[in-house]
Amino acid sequence: MAGGLSDEIRQFWDEDAAGYDNSPSHHPRRPNEQAAWGAALRRLLPDPRAHVLDVGAGTGFLSLLLAGQGYRITAVDLSPAMLTVLRGKAARLGLDVLTVEADAVSPPAGPFDAVIERHLLWTLPDPPAALAAWRRVAPAGRLVLVEGSWGTAAGIAGLQASARALVQRVRGAEAGHHGHYAEDVARALPHGNGISPAEVVRLVEASPWGRARLERLRDVEWAALDGRSLLDQLLGTSPRWAVTAGS
Image (cartoon, rainbow, N blue to C red; front, side, top):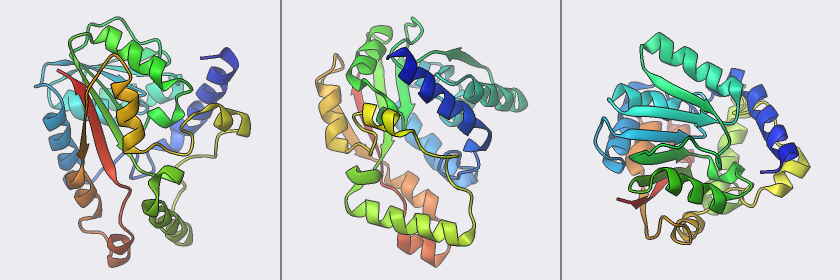
């Protein structure tokens, strides 16, 4: 990753860190949603005590959920401010999470039993290089890419997302981010407008990980809407899915 681009991306997420967890999609707090996420991750990952590398860990939603289930977690992020928030939450919860400040193509050596990410691929300038780097540090491990359909890659679901955003603005809810990437940064990202399941499968199968498996996370989607207002249920939620590969 070029230094200038890396610095701009790091600065964006550093500025985003303070308010990032205010979005329910970034950090679901309701017990039913956390339970659905926990069950999905247990299904997708090797059994607990496995050593998991969480790339693009941000403020630590996946890392903390997995550490609470008994996994050994190394959390990597480009943003030191994000990792500061993660460490604070881990300390309050009494959870042990090792944090490493690094970009996606420079993970710690491992070896790891699994590599996981959530909503990271769209912001990577070079996803194939990242996938290859992750395979090098988990040569006998499993890859779990947790993604959602949004932006131009979402199709009809994108129209629903626009409607949800309008409703949130009318309600006066906080935006999910403090702003948007600068135009030069957005142009440098091959998937800056979102990424489809088919595109992710192609990326994985062209990488050292080989054959990919695709799964829709309908339990997570259902939990996100359970107990919400009728309007929220009619507007739905972003499709959630996972692509896995490896052992």
